[in-house]
Length: 194
Image (cartoon, rainbow, N blue to C red; front, side, top):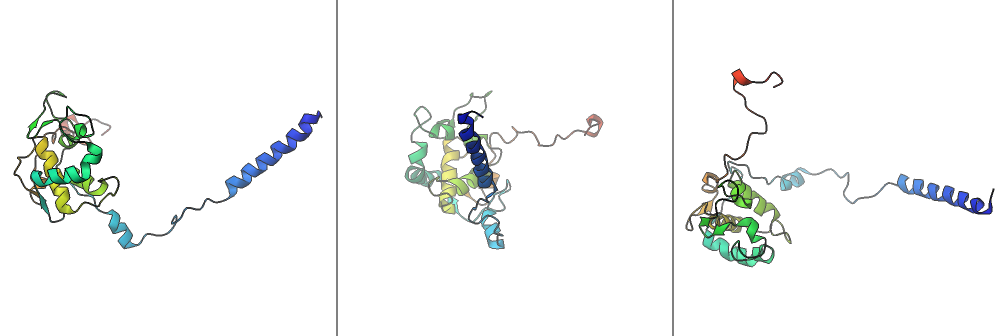
């Protein structure tokens, strides 16, 4: 056996043994495998459905939402209109109360106006915003920010109050822009595989 193989072969065997040993050691993740209590599970259960039955009491207007947006949201989303830079472009198309139309076959298509149900924005903002402290907005603040976004997108009027009763009643511009997850066929046209 050549001299280099005398050293290389044991080194390869040793390296393989070390790698196998490292893989056999269990990785420890804090909390992994710990059963969740009912309270833990309920703390995650905050999703708001299309009918808004799960919405908490509260209220907000576009004017109140503008102040909250300036204080808590502009740092990431920017300020101004869609002609300016910033993520606000993904939230607003047009100018206050006058949406831009024509981007996609004459329909409004941006974050909030693309949603089929008004409660989706409330649910998302409540759970995920602001990114630095998700879920830290009070219900009144969330209603106000949603009112601000919907007003700026021409979906509601400036003085409309958003609360647990009025928000689910907002008819979104794209409400009928989605197809059901499972196609619905009339009995006479139902395919054999359905």
